[in-house]
Image (cartoon, rainbow, N blue to C red; front, side):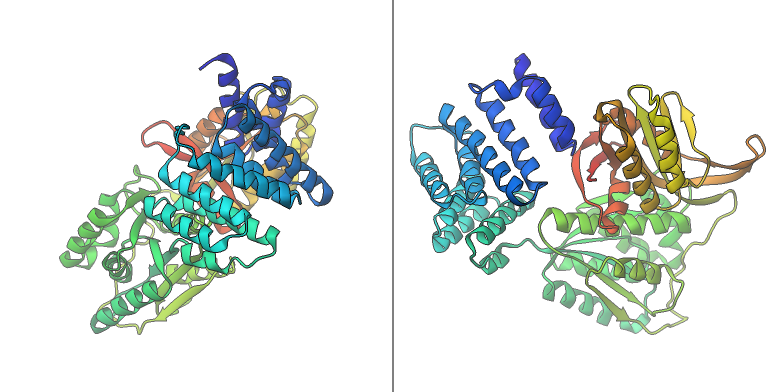
Length: 517
């Protein structure tokens, strides 16, 4: 990769991390906007202009789309390729230039038909691009046919499908036509499941009800834990129905099995093991903890809920919840039911009749130090904050931390009990810092131990949450708020959007997400 190629890759990394303002500044400072003879620079310029247009309104939005279309079209003129050309065609429509859009769409189809042009594009992309061009030409029947071809080429490329559906819905809105036909192509829904106990003879009825609900709601992805009883029964129904099962546990598989499965009989253990083997993924909040505590269980539920919501958002689908319990207040299943309800998303509650002979043991707090959920925000100052320090202090006064903030070298570490407070503080601090190049933030949620510290005279928190937040901050691009997957999931429950940007290397690796401000 040459020097300019490395520059473009560096800028694109900022775009994918959500630091679009920083990416724009790097693009301009690097003189890349003047490179009118470089198709790669023109294509990235179009991407940046498109992102800026989407953040604008009214005439500025229309002009932004037009400028982005021009950049993409210039790239395609220098090096004929369908990717910049179809982007130019769609953006011309969004800019209000319908005839120009039709012309570029027709040129895209001609380019796809050329036999002397070997593009390194997937069969899905080629068919979806033809479908998009046909939709711009207002041939919805042909567009539907080629979208069917695209899906047949990559039936489980869910994220590619979602991108296509977003684009087609936007085109339909701009054309003033119905997009109802796209419902046929929508990916399956994602569901979070939870429950409290098994009810003896009602197990078969519960399994049948869960299977029927999955079928009626067209659910394809299930997220939850595998405690003995309702969790395992519902998860088995999901596997039988062909769903992708994503297991989320508070601690290691062995620790969870000991605490939430084995006390209820050996038969549950065998069923648990079979589900672990059948699961699409198994995720633990903290593999290092020796026992499962209520705080860890609550955080695991939050992660499972957030993952279901994030998956549905990523796939342009819907997230639902299935809870089977007795409706008793102050139980864990009641907590997750109420937590989901405030998101405004649909949920189904199957009532169970309590039966003392078949209830399932749920672990309580073990002895030792108290545990609790903690969200740590680490603000790393690439350059000294200087006069901005007072503004950061004011921001923290509006979002007071759970324990006193502390400096670790050039990084300010702040702990919160609620994800909403941590995100509020991060956003407030970002808003008062004048130069995005001078700061970066990492944020992680987990469970720590809490003690009355005789050295500091106050509460101290011990665990892995702060070290992980510090590692994330050190790896974050300047001017971004980067969250762990656990934190991103908690943010999703709060309707805070995030985008995946890669992994933080280590054991285990941690998926990273850019929180959108």
